[in-house]
Image (cartoon, rainbow, N blue to C red):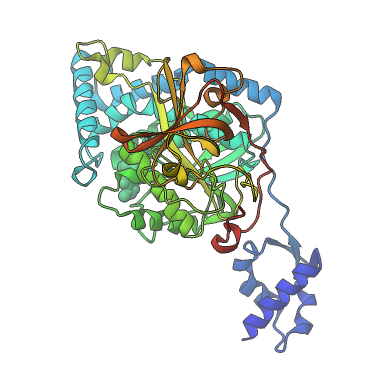
Length: 515
Ligand SMILES: C[S@@+](CC[C@H](N)C(=O)[O-])C[C@H]1O[C@@H](n2cnc3c(N)ncnc32)[C@H](O)[C@@H]1O
């Protein structure tokens, strides 16, 4: 009871004064306590209340914690990042580090024909396992070669993919000047090493990176690459990975107040986990997220993993996290993500020397992995969203859930572009979504219909909110999907996009249909 009174008094005073001493509180308590005791009761809660304590001559001054500084890239920093992305290849020291690690592990040159053949076998067996039904998969990374195969085949693409995602975070102001980052299921440290590389082109940003991984072999590779490539005492500090199972309720030594939690290509490896238990793993770890922190989930773009990832996003939304991007529920109601196969793309990377050597054989295509395609979501606790557009009441857009009533008719819709190019040079195809559709919907633009008024559908970035005026509704029976034919009479415009809002997430109030 005394504690409750103390807490409510502190909260009240903090709301009315920007700074105060704990000794000022004591006269208001029914049972006065020494300052030190007051401090020990409230100190674990201070950061949640947005307060900081400063020790001062036997007392504590309580002040409002200044909002963390966003890291905004300067023009020079942006140019350096762009120069990196133009190269489309992993940095040379990293490529050499991987080759040296392979040589160290196998006790021969990395390009010894016997070693190259073993790496090929490891890659093929890993891919075979990946394409098994998820409950039959057995990826454990216990054998050394499974990790060496991962380094040769998966690492380069996932490394550059992570850098693209970091650029998105930076553009959106989701990187802070100093950050605590947790990478869950880090493997050989793809994400931490990509962060260190991205930050090496920033002037003043700092990050402390923690990670969780259960495979000894991955941890060994990660530690080698970290020690070889990341300077000690620099602006990025990569802590030794925590060896643990991410399904555990009690992962040791997790940092508190994490600014960014990343799950990159890991949740799909929890073969027998239900959607609910995957969501529980994310929310459990998100318990340590800072109030203004972000969760980034990335999964492969194949249909099974991408659609599951989208369902997981909705499950997490239903558990109280808000979707920052790429989804935006523009009609106000939360979607159920039925069959939502949506993914982002980036330019293919160039072959590393190692991959080129692996591909120097008959079935070369089996060893070449250069396409960047990924399904991702950023979630938050504070309700902030990237796109704030909501369909205004009384507007004349048709909800995508009503398309079945308008087959053969011309209509107007408001929707997000939710894919890169799914068609070809003759007929451009893009997935679109307004958060209502029960059946997948695609905008289809035959190339001979392209005009300056409609080609925004090809150039708009993934996740943009667009207005499509005068599109013809067609039902595609073979795929149980609707196509909206974009013709030369169609006009496509960006829709007004507000600033990210920080409204508290509240399913009932916040997502009331305005229209
Ligand atoms: C496909 S790798 C992804 C590595 C890295 N995040 C990336 O994007 O390249 C998945 C990693 O998650 C780890 N992992 C899978 N299940 C795990 C679990 N239950 N606990 C801890 N780590 C796990 C695997 O050992 C592996 O290193």
